[in-house]
Length: 126
Image (cartoon, helix red, strand yellow):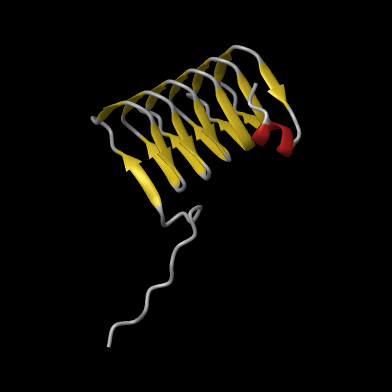
């Protein structure tokens, strides 16, 4: 008899949309689940869960999500309602709006950074 599978929560680490290195997408990505980008995206990326841009990942467009962990490159604005982590090799060319931010030594961003309350960042991405 087959066991009944439990539905995974949208933000479960086991539920990840993955764009592997060597893959390029032109167009916007919208998801309710986690996204990991190790390839290239030319377009906006939006998720109500977490977005990870790996070391070789690159996004040219705006990023919008609950949490983000960036080790690669973002050419666009980032609106993060939770925590943004910029890893050692991360580079952002654009403005940041986040509730909390953690920047490792070596990470860089060129733009303005605003930190607001969780509600303001989630509902007012100006």
